[in-house]
Amino acid sequence: MYNSYIMNNSKIRVYLDNCCFNRPFDNQTSLVINMESIAKLYIQSKILVGDYDFVWSDILEFENSNNPFEERNKRIIKWKKIAVVKVESTNEVIENAKKYMELGIKPKDALHISSSVFGKADYFLTTDNGIIKKSQKIKDVKIMNPIDFVKEMEENNEDGRID
Image 1 (cartoon, rainbow, N blue to C red):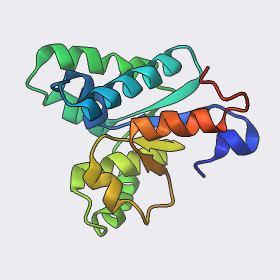
Image 2 (image 1 turned 135 degrees about the vertical axis):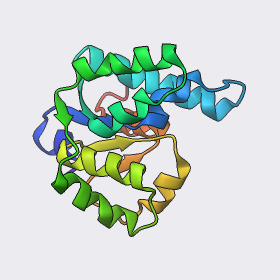
Image 3 (image 1 turned 135 degrees about the horizontal axis):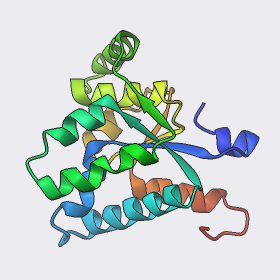
């Protein structure tokens, strides 16, 4: 499922979870956090110019609405309008999330993953290493860090540059 761009040359569809959205607001003194922030902002720029499609979900909106930082909340909610797909937390999405919870993934994170699957995302992007480690058995969507995603896109580009 997650290699649709390579197989049929359609747009790559990405889902960014809440921790990914909030990464640029974190303390940037850590090199890894800074690099993740840069990669995440780059991915968003590619969404804005139409190179990637973006998936939004009810769980993203729910978590964002509970963000105690009003400025972050306002900046993140704007992405709902940019999404090509908005996934509601239906019974199907919730039931599907339970199989991810069986892998040790927390309920909200499992809902994010399930939403990405129902939104037909090729990639689920997160800065949460716990999700990445526990998601090794998930084949419904490719789960990775934004840095690794950018690197993979660069490697898949024939001329070696990121457009």
